[in-house]
Amino acid sequence: MKFPYKKSKGGITIDIKVEPRSSRAGIQGIVGDTVKVKLTSAPVDGAANKQLIELLAKELGIRKSAFKIIRGEKSRNKVIRISGMDAP
Image 1 (tube, rainbow, N blue to C red):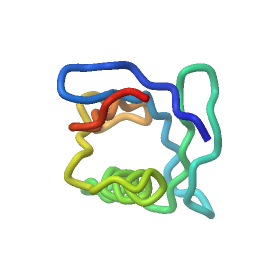
Image 2 (image 1 turned 90 degrees about the vertical axis):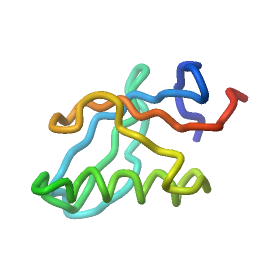
Image 3 (image 1 turned 180 degrees about the vertical axis):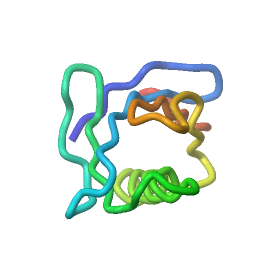
């Protein structure tokens, strides 16, 4: 699956739309320029954000420390920076 991304200083950014409290966790697909992700965690105490980073790191094969939520930490719509990654 090819992710839509934007080049940013020191890496790339991707737009994510999160659906917490789903029955299954996983990347559901791409809608426009946004990656849709379902999570089983509730959006309480950062649990959904933590699960999102873990899921993306596993799916993309990138270490978790490379990911940072730069916008939307308390929203379903998020922008995530992946540091040290060049655009393909």
